[in-house]
Image 1 (cartoon, helix red, strand yellow):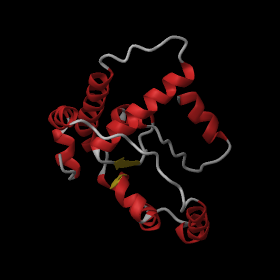
Image 2 (image 1 turned 180 degrees about the horizontal axis):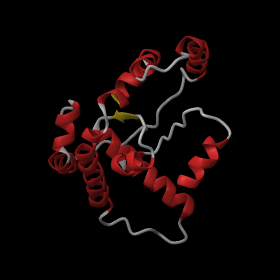
Image 3 (image 1 turned 180 degrees about the vertical axis):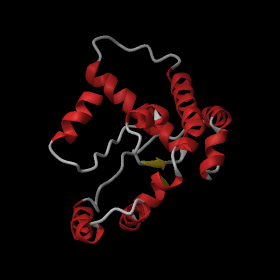
Image 4 (image 1 turned 90 degrees about the horizontal axis):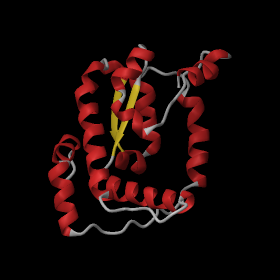
Length: 177
């Protein structure tokens, strides 16, 4: 990763934005590698995250499988991965100075993306939002009819398992369990 970052930043001084959910639990490492890094954390309703992640796994399996995958225990593994990743995140989040950390909900970003992106620019004192805004609005116009994938409902038993394992995150980000 470090080699890739060096190559990306060799020719210019512009900020590089990494969007990678696995980096959620790498705050300390990222700060060691990039001491001046800024962080934007977008949280989402944990039930929706679970359903979306399960769907992504199944799609990837269909595309890449050579044999039928053994999905016994998949729900348990997804629940555990999310718990471990976010426990580490909540432990390491205080390492980031407040002026270099911005958190928002996916729902707020979806509802008013221009306002949220403007807020990010303001928080980090980034120049250029006024120049960006027309292009941003133009892009948003091209995706206004986008339909999100339908996600299946969770059984009451699975919802209970998720809310018990992830209760801390529901509470942290204000989602009803």
